[in-house]
Length: 321
Ligand SMILES: NC(=O)c1ccc[n+]([C@@H]2O[C@H](COP(=O)([O-])OP(=O)(O)OC[C@H]3O[C@@H](n4cnc5c(N)ncnc54)[C@H](OP(=O)(O)O)[C@@H]3O)[C@@H](O)[C@H]2O)c1
Image (cartoon, rainbow, N blue to C red; front, top):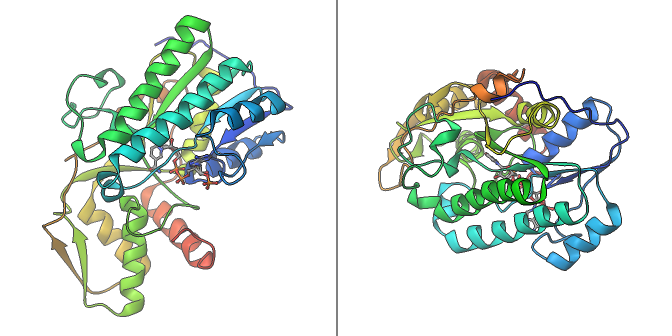
């Protein structure tokens, strides 16, 4: 991969972060702010429904952003996805089509489309490289979300090819951090486990039940590390292939539960509900491509679990439940 691309993002550039209120988008916002960017634009879905093409085009034609970060999506955990594949497919296709087509139509200079590691085949060789895309069947539980995100990667490639748009795709691994969605059921594994362990501790439960065997392995990246990765990609990458953004190590879910239990202070037994599905056995990404551009994660898992739990405790009234 060529590593000699360099692009300066002017400090007064107008940067539209679609999904700025979410886990990923809020971290991306913080990353831009930390580097002195002040002309940041965001809209909640109640103000601008990105599934509405006319409304999205009106907004883009008025705001004329220089940069777009497409971090708005309908997002959920394995159980939420499995129950609503049609909605995850349809909503996400519409959101990303409107954003990417609109970015082309209204002259956005550079854009980053956020996909996800679930675009890769269920049994892709580990660690998963970007060229595993479309080489095998998907994990069936979240195929709606995955197909939409795969379409997004190809949409970016087609816009580059046909219209010369300088847009790129980033594939983050599982994210966590402040502002995560702790709503049960339907949350991702990380916030779901943290919230349920907290609730078990508060209720004085003697046993905490992990859904499934807990033997699957997952990679987790703090959202603030993704925020810095997005800046790296805007400045250093201009290619059609998606770029993985991962932590570089994974952890067995049972070990994550043990780490979280220690941080939360839950001292009961750990059991398992084997009637629940496990999902893909392992999903560690090869993030060599973005590392070759000078990015690496800075927040370790123990530190990240602790700070996220502190955020959770401090935001009891406002977090998404
Ligand atoms: N979380 C992860 O583990 C993870 C992993 C890999 C990739 N990603 C990617 O990161 C992106 C964001 O995920 P996230 O975890 O940050 O999700 P999130 O916390 O649930 O945030 C979703 C964001 O999208 C916005 N949104 C949703 N539907 C919208 C609509 N119809 N119109 C306008 N805005 C809408 C939400 O706005 P409101 O709050 O105003 O509704 C919110 O800002 C997604 O593309 C996802 O694929 C996430």
